[in-house]
Image (cartoon, rainbow, N blue to C red; front, side, top):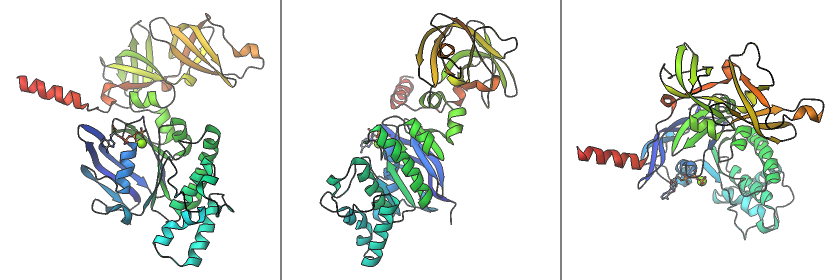
Length: 385
Ligand SMILES: Nc1ncnc2c1ncn2[C@@H]1O[C@H](COP(=O)(O)OP(=O)(O)OP(=O)(O)O)[C@@H](O)[C@H]1O
Ligand SMILES: [Mg+2]
């Protein structure tokens, strides 16, 4: 038996000129909660539809439970899907909706009744079995959809923005519920969302997608602390990018010179040879803002406060530096009085951070993005020669 419930090997799906999924290779461990995260149109739903068997890869192969499923029709795959819009049967009761999969498999009535009860208890909806879907709230309908999918004991449960239609409060509660249910049933979840916070809080690992490509697949903290590309750094949380040129490098330590002549020290895992143009990425909460220049600091830039947004527990400042665009800084409001909590606009400040907080994003680390227009342009250039 395979250690992986699901595997993509070089899977590509094109629709005409559009590369909806571009050479995706990854593995999902048994019982894992994997999120596919990315902006609209990046290929999340297409990936799910290929796993479910509603679309076939243009090239590459998908494995479920260690076996290639290219020739397996959707109804023979041990996979169920929960969609954004509750696809419940409107004229069937909750009981009949949840029982549907087992009725199709012609299980004995006593077994079906027992399993339906168990599922409704799991999703914390006992006692609503006789109601119809329109007599339930949105969140309750999604619980029924979940029960209806899980009753089939799928190897992999696919969830395509299942909370997308719910209001924020219900959504937050359902996130917790989904995590609990995932822990209880131990089924592998592949969860699609374009909400980075949802992906960070719920997932074991996240695959960040952009233009059909997986730019990074890592744990939530790996994605946040060590983004591999500019896109990932910008898509997950706030990040400051300071452009400069690599001046020197010793092992992982890099010195970058900004246009102003200021030098920054940062760490890099790859690329970044002297002379290369790079971005130094720093998260706003890793920056210390002080009124006087500290005696010894690896990285320290002078600027002045141009704006701030008081957020209660923290205040987000915009600081304009001598040469660079605005830098955002998040300061935790740990002062004892409200006076300590704000630094007024116009104040001269120093922004400092440790060497390890600055991450080099070089062009080499960037996943190449194939744009069909580039390909066409390239083909034209070749034709002209
Ligand atoms: N059946 C189809 N025919 C043609 N193009 C398609 C088809 N299905 C998807 N696409 C295209 O493939 C790309 C990826 O679509 P997909 O639905 O997978 O995106 P998504 O990441 O799920 O986006 P969203 O967050 O908006 O749901 C898009 O450019 C889309 O227009
Ligand atoms: Mg989609």
